Image (tube, rainbow, N blue to C red):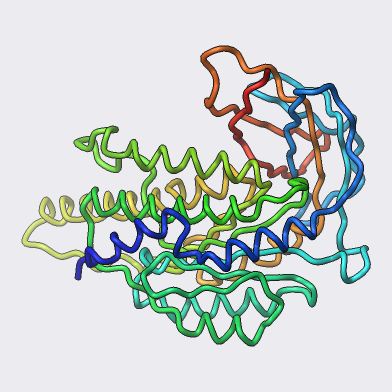
Length: 371
């Protein structure tokens, strides 16, 4: 069954932020602004713009807490930048009220098959149960039947809400429909990141996206790049807002492991070989989309993680909780924006001079114009 046109009409409303709810937007903005930390920051000349980066550094799955400023190098567009701020944040040692973290769960029901509803609900409940006593959770979906919760510590209400979730994905497979669904998800994430922006963008926040995802570019040679320009534009907007809001996206594909390939039979070896090749190409495309598609790009570019092709959908939750408690807060002065480069994304790379360490941080940002 194809996705009804009503979903796309509803998605247009959602893209403006209305489906997140005026109350949700207002409550999130007020709460986050009021809760922004008033820590001191370096003073610079008027017009100076700082680029803030939160870096997760681990070794053998554990946080590396003892790096020094000399151990870390940040490159902007491939050019090393002097750090003007360097701090290791460890909320696990802070008093309980100060351990509060904010999470937003985005349930992409438009891109989750009804058969994955139970797995999605179980994952959401596991997320809720893993929150700290003072952590707040907001919930938003992409479909027409609003599943909305403002930032709250009410676990009972959150559990009751996610139990109502139902996947709405149909059998729609045209490029146009896939494009609309991808844009819907990207703009919901962008809107959520915009709401999460506060007076102090140094506080790391997490968005958990549960979706089957899709492509972020042509998936067949006969598809023109022009068909995907709206998706790429929405992606760039999401990346820019996530960077401004210091948001990391953690994505989960609820489909779990693929079933083994069916046994192939035919009248002769040539027919069997052709059928096997076609099935292999289809399976390969599906695996590539999971590993390098929209969900992976969203997570990778913001410093989050992707859980896919695993039956343990909650495998990434402990790491996400750890990331939100222990990370390095870095900052450098944004290099001058050359004429004609306004609005063009720049790359960020964080390097650590420690062997056998893994580093995750956002990889792109949109520079602000300078006077």
